[in-house]
Image (cartoon, rainbow, N blue to C red; front, top):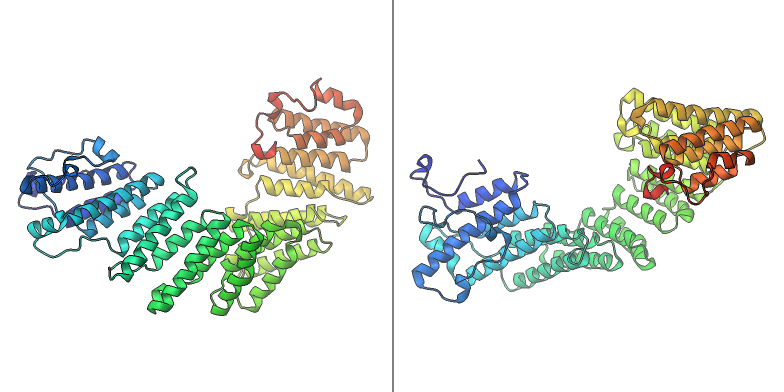
Length: 536
């Protein structure tokens, strides 16, 4: 039980003496419990054991400094974690105990608080070591040799704690936390060179690289790359196969360099790092996906040529694309504005559907189908409704036949379909009628099936646009626009974009009636109450 005390006074445990193994086991149990109170309990158990050791040291040899009589800083000492009477056993503390505590803090998801407490635990162990308290306790209580000094695991867990704090916003997150990781790694390297048993291992370097990568800044990216280069030098120096950088380390740096979105970092990612990975034969699907997404973020409208080149390079090198690869290519196609974007998107969809029969990692998802619909909606071709209908039908059919929610249509898929219909071009009245019916029918289908989600402003904007562009009868157009706009008002989803589309689409004589005397730029709260920040 996690609530068990370390006291040996209970009759159940008579004759059983708690020791360093017992202490580490209790701490590990709390660390693995996922209990809300595990963070506090681990600190309380550890500090309680430390207090007993220090009290025993003082009573045995007299106080050596005022520090011996001071309580440790930390919230653990504000809790009632048990009496320090003779009924509580004196327990030796060693490196394994300390590492168990640090591991518990690393698992606590407490961010900066866990990192600071971990640093305090480490500083306390260093202090007790320097004064010989830990070694005397080992000699007197256990009689067997045990290490009390920090080892590789100790420092790696410290780095893990600070690395987890990087994503926490505020003064002590971000680069501050990453710098602490860097300082600990540098200290380890110095100690190792001085003969201490603290050689950084692959987890140590990985944690440091990840910490800097998660800063999502130019400096963070360059620092991550610097540590990767340091790791390469360490591998050459020690000839330790475990220290040889692999795709995980390179991909973390690739991601950081691409996220930084500066010319310098992107060139380093695209030219230096990827080329090096190819030479080492460790470039993988994730590597290419990262670079493709980097191109997409840097210049969405001009990214497709580079993305397509990388895609061909993947196939030449025998690297299997996955769903993320295809989604990225489709996203690039939707933004490139090329005349041949639609046939390319349809061809990609056909490739995925065929390949996923043998390779599940390329199974198209809702995102894939929605991206293909967006390619059609934004294209220059006149006939958009029919290819959009076919893509949507393919998604719905695969979702139903496979019972796979990963390709279930959602509000964004329906919105993309309606948008494609609304953008139908050409003078053919029959095709316009087809597109209008498809848009209205898709909306009705969406509303009848709650599992697809709730309408949003984009759905209503697309519908109003479809009614305004595709209906050739003025009376019908006015009635349709009026009906859709009324529904949009009732749903509280009249965004600025919806209002602009409405003003362009609605017959002049109906505008004043539909606005109910309100200023078009100062709408009542009731009309906009359900808008999200992104749809305003």
